[in-house]
Amino acid sequence: MITALKIIAILAVGYLLGSVSVAVIVSKYLFKSDVRDQGSHNAGSTNMARVYGMGAGLLTFAGDVLKTVFAMLFGRLLLGEMGFAIGGIACIIGHCFPVFFGFKGGKAVAVSGGIAIMLGWQYALSLIGLFLIIAIITRYVSLGSLIAVVMIIPALIIFGGYGPWVYFLAAVMIVSVWYMHRGNIKRLLTGTENKFVPGKRKK
Image 1 (tube, one colour):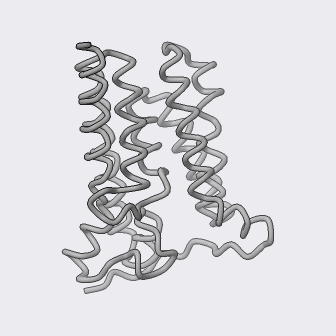
Image 2 (cartoon, one colour):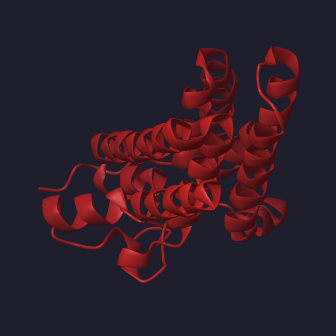
Image 3 (tube, one colour):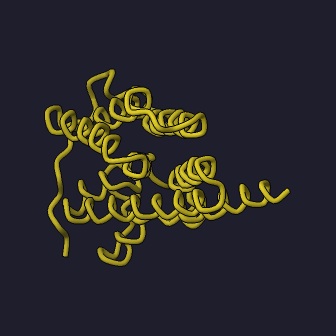
């Protein structure tokens, strides 16, 4: 009974933290507009950078990583590795479908980056490094995201240190990122995906 209540608490806190859409908050309060009405219409750090500039994109990414860290730390405090993973999963769901912003959120990439950071520097370096290499070379941020997130499984096998719950978290990461990028996948296959070009900071 106590374990069930702890799981419910972790899910609730993780989801609510995930639902704090940093992109929407930053765009509305700093730029007086909703990023979801511009660019790719996605509430994520890439669209923020595309519309408002790299500074806005980095600020959004940092905020999304921070909420992931809090969600996973809270989970680990209550239920160890199991809670750690559940907190990350709940944060992903909240980020993609935020209750505070009409269930229209991001594509789970920044949260996945936060999870990689929480897993350890090896994971962060592997996933975020691979993402940056692919995104910089091809200028397709979506392609970098899709390939990098899949590498979480090989990284877990190589570096080790985690049990089944974290592998489950990794599976949810992959499915979420690929599902939220289904439109991007179609455009990549047809050669119509837009390459990333950072916008200029709007006053």
